[in-house]
Structure formats: C-alpha cells, structure tokens
Image (cartoon, rainbow, N blue to C red; front, side, top):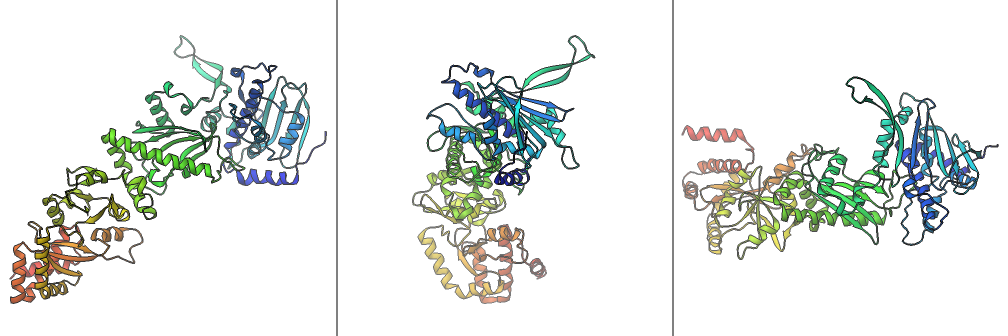
Length: 628
C-alpha cells in the first residue's frame, strides 16, 4: 500500500488551516460533528425516494467515544458513508466540497439542510491530533475503506472491515505540552461543554457512553459505578419550536441559562423570516446593564448559528452600538461562510439581517414603552445613555431609529418624558423645545432661566447626562421644533412688549454694561434681561458652546493641555433692585460698581453649577465688603 501525496495546493492549504486559519482549537469537534450530520442528511434525503433504505429517522445518530488509555477520540455516524473514490476526492483534495455539490443538486423545497463543506473543516482536527483515521462504508456497498493521514506528508487508502453503513473518524491526540493540554479533549466534561456550546442544536442525537458514581439504592454510604448512554445535545432549538409549544417562562429560562443573567428579560423578540434571506432570530432585552457595559471591554453581538451550529459567539455586525445591549441568537442557512467557520464574510445577507433586526428591536422597545412604561423606564435607565449617544454619533444619521425612544427628565412632572410627549404638550404658539443642562435635576430646576420659563408655563427638559446636550444639538429639531437652551441668548422667552422694553434699557445703559464687562474681563457681554423672578443675575451662553458643554469637554481625558472656553454672558434681572443699584453706582462710584460686577459674576456662576474660576478674587471682594 503506497502513500499518496496531497496536491501541492492542498499541502499549502493544510498548513495554512492548521497554523493560521483556525485560531480556536475547540472548533475541531464542531466541524467533524457537522460533517457527520451532513452525511446523515444525505442518506435521509435519499430514503425519501429510495425504498430500499429502511432506516427510521429516529435511528440516526452521531456517537462520540473517548479512549483515554489509547489517547483516541472517535466520532461515528450511520449516514451515507463514503466509497474509496469519495475518500480520495473529498479528503485527498482539501476544499473539495461534496456537501456544496450535493446541496446544489437538491430539488427546490426539499426539507434538507447541509451545514458544512466536507474536506475543509475536517482538517482542523490536525490542530489537536497527530494522526487521523477515517473508516467508512457507503450505503449499499459491500466493501469498507480506511483513509489514514498524519498530515501534509500524504495519506493512504486501503480496504478495511466495518459493519454497517456510515463513517468513523478516529483522532490520535497529540501529546500534552506545557502550553497545550490535548488530553483534555478526552475528558467527559470537556466534550459535553463543546457539544453544548457549538453543536447543541444539531438535528440528530449526539450520544456518548458516560460513567458516574451514585449512591446504591437504599444505602446512605455505599456507592456504585453506573454506565449509561447519554444524549449530549438538545437537538431542537427553542427558536425552531412552534410558538404554541413554548411558554414565556420557557423563553425566560433559556435566556437566563444561555446568557448568564439572574433576572428575567424585560422583553423578547422571536422572528422567522423567509424570502430574500432566511433566518430565525430570538432576541432578548435585558433589564439591567452588565457590569462592564459602559467600558471598553464590553463586546456586543449576537450568537450566530448556521443551521443550528454555532459559528460565532458574538457577531457584532448584527447590532448597531446603540442596541448593543440586546442579547440573543440568529440562525440562518443562507450565510456565506469563508474557508473557516470562525470568520464570516461581510455579505449582503448579513447586512440585510442586521437591518431587519434593528427595525424589530426598535418596534419592540416602542411597544414596551407604550404597554409597560415602568419596565421600559428600567431598561432606559440601564441603557439610555448609549441610545442617546447613538443620536450624537455619526452626525445624527441614526435619528430615525432613536428619536422616539430617548427620554429626558421634565419639569412637567419631574419624571422622564419623550420628545413626542413634550411636543404634544406644547403651548399654543410655542415654536421651540426648551432644555437646560446641569449636574442634577434639582440643580437645573433652580436655575434662574428655568424658573422663569416654568413660571410662564413652558416645559423644560433637564439634561443631566453628559451626552444629553450633545444628542439634542446633533438632532437639531423634532417634528419641526428646534431645541433651544433656556440658558442661551437664543431662548427669548417673554412677550414682545417685554423684549422691546429690555432692548431699550440695554441701549440706554450701553456704556455702563460695557464698563461692567470690562471689569469682569471673563464674559463676552453684560446685559439686562427680564423675568428672572427673584434672582439678581444669571449666566447665559453665547455662540454654540454652552457653559455645561465647556465643563463636560474639559473633564474628558486628553483635554488637560487644551481647554475649551464657552462664550459667557452675564445677564442682570431688570426687575430686581440690584439693577437700580448698579445704575446708581455707575454715576456715583465706578470702583464699587466694578467690584459688584465681579461679585454678581461669581454668584451667577455658582447658581449655574459652574466652578468659581478665581476664588482669591472672590475672597478679597467679600472681605472688602465686610470691612467697609
């Protein structure tokens, strides 16, 4: 029996696969089990038209046998088997895909599904084994053949004895090293874990003989060793079962077990899609954020299956960042896989699935908001910051997906409100949606401009999350209503008569206000304003950068060397007694006016939640005032 050589390109491909393509050794078992499932599929499909095949569907199985003493792992099936030519063609030429050719020949509408490409993933077994032996007997054949190879040096094919149809793949495991413990693949717990992770939903039972120690019946201290045949896989995934057979509790239990959560999900989404792309999806919306959700270490993504076989644990391309908290699975037979199932080609089907899922997630969140506001509030409390960041990211291109989902604390009732709810409550003739940023709702509610706006019957959003103001500015407007910061010079709250009166007063006191601005030297302007209730003065923002944005940006890492500065304006309450005092000082004591101007500036900063930028100057002013 002479050794046959792999073709040159096959040698190169084998070396590449073992050393480069497959980075996770664990997947070798998935590949061989998938090939076994393919072989059973082929025979089962033939049995639909060939009456000589009398195997019941319930009799098909895949069996795993570990022999620790011999150092071998065997995976057998009772599928279609292979002839000598099949062994040479499918295993002698790597990347010769019998399964793909078979699938291309299937009649339209046939209930058959081929997972992999035999002869490609099969060779991943060389990552863990020093020799592979394949013994196979094709259905209806009288002879069986043995294929054997120790790697790129070549292979042999020879007759052998084998009862019944099917294939047995035996791996002779490599010796353990300091870095790699190949013997662990002969441990029952490791094999169970690999089947559970990658092949739990293969449609045929995967069986293994297991041993365990149990208390003897009727005894409290005597044990016995029990050997039994165990099925390692679940076979039918929950997302493939009819909805009538699955309860909400079943979905909740699946979620908690699969995604390691102690709490039921807030909602789940089950979707089955056929047409341009075929897939099943089962998604879950958690109630709480994982501990690392807002860190760089968090990995978003859905588990991606191809016909029940796990090919990617976290496929990030299926979820946008702002819905990255969603957990779940997608199972599709239509995905284009490259030479390794570890990597997925970026193809049209994947993008189409992602687009459909995004719409489905948005719809489910809106439904939850409408039907169970308390639960939605809990979800939004956990993940709302990331959704609001989604409004800001990519120049606001995701506003259609997110603008109806985000909420902000409102002056209306002190609770969260959506943009739509605000718009429906707007006063007659109101054009703008008002907001005010700050560190907390309590602090924002006490801002002079907010008190003035609320007193006039306007609703104000309290923006207490650092991303809030950036999100609204990026969004620009909602339903034709621009967003306006009540603490900016664009707010313009008040009647036209009031605005005209303030304008005349500013013109009349122009020189005094310029003097005050120069005395402070840290504002772009000083001016009178109306309607601040009991507050003597406030800080407003000119230009596009607010005082709160200045504070947020300057807190960010990397901002130490280059601080940003907002254009600040000191506004004096024209209806407060301090306005008359300032006018009098301008005529009688301009030095004191200069001091009072700076005192009003520091007072306004503190009320606005801004730090005092010159504590020494404030201290000296107070001491001078106390010792007059």
